[in-house]
Length: 221
Image (cartoon, rainbow, N blue to C red; front, top):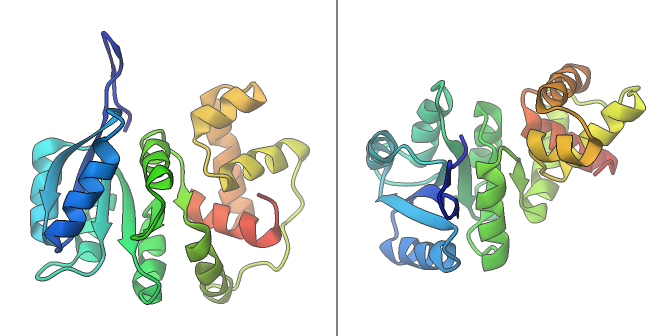
């Protein structure tokens, strides 16, 4: 889902924040909105409120804690990720929640961010997510790779890829969207989508985030 351009340039990226700590949400809202390119359109303190806010505001991006009272964030994200018009989703996490992050990867969440992320990195991540990219905090990547390699077993080195497939994979591992990859390589976005689909099959990855993780583990990105 992408923001539509308005008369004075691209529309702000619409974000829903979900965390059970109001002070953290307030801080995140301030960080995200300071540049004027992102607008927080809704907040939620639990999973049920997150789903309601997503239904009401139709955001481009959802940032959610995985542990919240009642219906937790992971359950809400699992529901959101199954919808045909799902927003881009990212988990806000801490170092001690590896099991939740691994499950979020399995259900198709596109972004993994630590709560102490640099403000500029957070803003950039939201923009990248809205554009269709995958966002992985390097500190989370290091912890996810062993789990991805173990279940199911992942290849220890990349399969044989064509030059163009390697180029696409390198940019995918850097978190680039299909449109951005197309611009970089001089390809139509539809062609990039075909390359990404073929790469997922060759790599045995469920989604582009897993592919990016594998590529980073091999040193491709």
